[in-house]
Each structure stands twice: as C-alpha cells, then as structure tokens.
Length: 228
Image 1 (tube, helix red, strand yellow):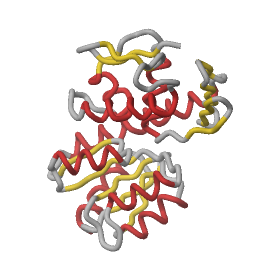
Image 2 (cartoon, one colour; image 1 turned 180 degrees about the vertical axis):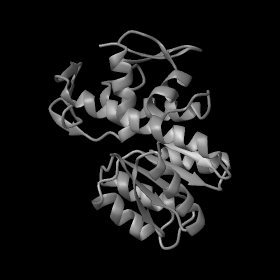
Image 3 (spheres, helix red, strand yellow; image 1 turned 45 degrees about the vertical axis):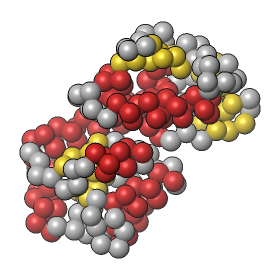
Image 4 (tube, helix red, strand yellow; image 1 turned 90 degrees about the horizontal axis):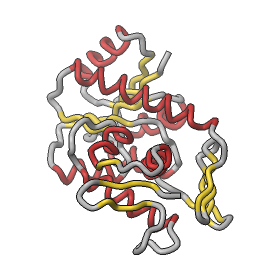
C-alpha cells in the first residue's frame, strides 16, 4: 500500500483529499504546517507528497528545497492557488514533479497521483541495471551515483531522471514535450524551458566541453538525443 503525505493547512481540503485517497486504497498521513510536513517527509517514508505552497511556519517551496537539498527523491505534487508562471518556474527549479493549481478536478488529481506513483516505481526498478559508462562518466543506477573521471558529481533528481530517459532511448531524438511527459509527467508542451535548464546542468557537469557537447545533443527544432 502506497503511503501519501498531505501537507495542507486547509483542514476541510485535507480531510476531503484523505477520504478520497483512502477510498483508492492509499495510506494517508496529514501535516497542517510546513515544519511538520518537512519532518514527516524526512522520517515517515512517504511514497508521494502532496504539498501546498502557502503554509504556516515554512512554505511549500522551503519544504521542497530542504527535502531536495537532503537528496530526498520522493515525488512531490505541489497543490497551490498560485498560478503565475514565475511560481511554476520556481517549483520546477526546486525539482517539483507536478504542479496543480487550485481549484482542481478531483479525478484529475487522482490520476496524477497514480501516474507519479507508477513513474516512481519504474524509477526504482532501474536501480537493478548494470553500471553505465560513457566518456569520463560512470553511473551506478543502484545507488544513483555519478562519477566523472572518478570524482562524484551531484545531479538534481530530475536532471538524473532526464539523463536516464535519454540514455534509455540511446540515439533516438526525444522532443521536449516527450521528455516533460516521461520525466515530469506532463501531457502537453508546457514549461519546455524546464527541460532546457536541466540539459544545461547535465552538460555543465558531465560534458568535457559544455559549449560543444558530445553526449547530450541538441537536434534543432526537434529536441535532444543521447550519444555515447
């Protein structure tokens, strides 16, 4: 049974979400402020976190930043009334997995929860793969560690997932929309700059010359492909 942590200070909304998620067969843990949510995100071993942006004590962005800085890779669905693009960009830069704006349709939210849990399950299964090597890079999927010339390199969780998605389709060109769908779970071509910023991170940290990449290749007006 998947465990879902809801961090939401609106008691009625939190209770409604809990009721419907439990009907779907999930175990639900509640937190009504950011500090408690951060503690439970660290220690309660949730499989998914539904995180409000506007919270007492610590806001959702602060909670997310703290979790990601501690390498907590639990999928996070940010549920918020903030609809401005700048807020979405802020969330994605902190490696939120999905961003849902209030008011929302319950059925859509439940489908997004299922999708995130499925993708996270597939991500865990890839941990059994053998080491992957290209150029100066050595990847251990079991521990999600990356070495460049024998030295450890830290990638954000989504940059790592983006890297693995491209490697898995070696040589095949993937559009930004496809990468958003496969890595972030989006169905449409939204926030394509998110893909570009993470490709920039991969090139900066993994390529010998980020200005002339040998592995993470841009295909003009189409997308990106991986070349070993």
